[in-house]
Image 1 (cartoon, rainbow, N blue to C red):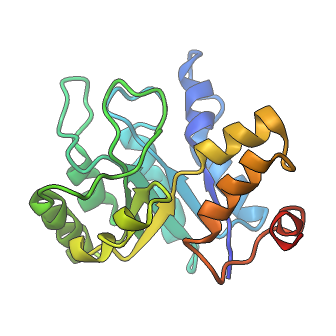
Image 2: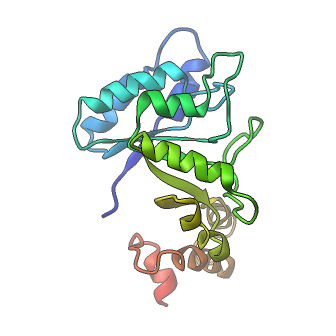
Length: 209
């Protein structure tokens, strides 16, 4: 079953752009849960441009008040502590104990996540991180491109699931529209990773023609 987890990063970005604590990230979390969301997602980055460590702890407490609601923390498992107060990704997962840790191979300087993991090399450190987060009670998801060879390697590092990077499809759809052959081909590439997945009704006709 498909459920919605709402990412609150942009609420924090707006708050950080002005003085004070408005808009409140925690209040936004309460709002989305009241509206029926099944989870809350955050991606605290080392530069603390949006979600900050205290947001993570406050949201973890909020989710604990709502049985059945999931908390998902995204980030690079190799991001260590910074002098600006970022405690490191490990510390955030250990303290917040989210239901899911989504591991993303982004660097400090990236504006946003724009590629998945390359699992073709030595994955020993990643294997250790996955096992560590699972010991702390988190299901582990890897951020991946729709590359079958890469996805076939996910199980070997011990991850429980994947999140597909859909940026290329979104860019094609925005530039050419949903009916363009390139957009349709991109969509098909994603669907091949989930052959039994249900597509929204407005996208399914692209593949059924």
